Length: 356
Image 1: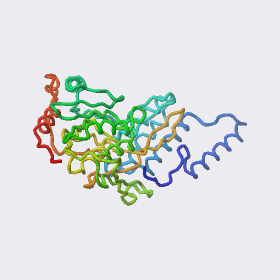
Image 2 (image 1 turned 90 degrees about the vertical axis):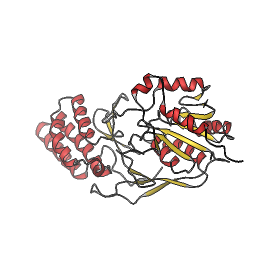
Image 3 (image 1 turned 30 degrees about the vertical axis):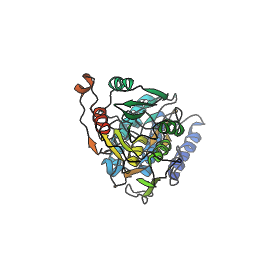
Image 4 (image 1 turned 180 degrees about the vertical axis):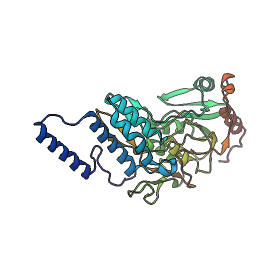
């Protein structure tokens, strides 16, 4: 993971603000003889200020999002202070952060509940029921949760449903690749995968990478102005293992592919033997989110980097376009068809075998 610049500790307001709060408390204690003099409105104001300032100092995507953060403060600061309960205050914060349309800026409650501030309503080119029909006919083998393989129309097939290190490891994927080591063609399906471990996704990409590959460039904030960004840091993948799969690969992607899965796709698309097939990815690239304390056990996550692909396309909000676009409709799924799988099965089944 990249080293990030020093950050203000979550929950620590600016020095001037802390001193002002101390002065207020001292004055109140002298006048009233003690007790809790901080009203709910003041607590909510302090929490809102903490949230707003954390984004103001560390969020790198204001220009990409086209959001005036000062205007967001002017719009939501009053309702935050006026909120008469924690639930009402959290609703105000959610609405304020929602102006960023960033799926990595979520709220977490004291019981672990998560409130999204942004969602996607894009049509997803993967349907579980239809998919199961295909892989079941292909002799599906469930290796681990969210990981398995089949053989579709004579073509080796691997599906990875999440980059979840508690479910499987890169070694588990290696074992599947070992099974298909002598194959010329392979389908890797990550259409249902919305992210997870960035490191796991890159470790798997490294098994397809015969030489060092730069797949992404990352920037973080390094100043108080919203446009103050550190120089780009290239992210590379080195070959991993005693051999790499260099046969023809169709990597199936779509609108659900996000976060660490977009990292996987960004690296794989740079390999000459890989063709990305399907639809554009989600465009939700934030990583290293910083948790910032709000109130009553609630936190908000502040995304802290801007990611570009190797060709310098910003991923956030735009996604990664496929090499081959395959249209899919709800009618296809209703008829039991998966046009993306149909395309790759047909093309790869008819592809010439490589010489050995």
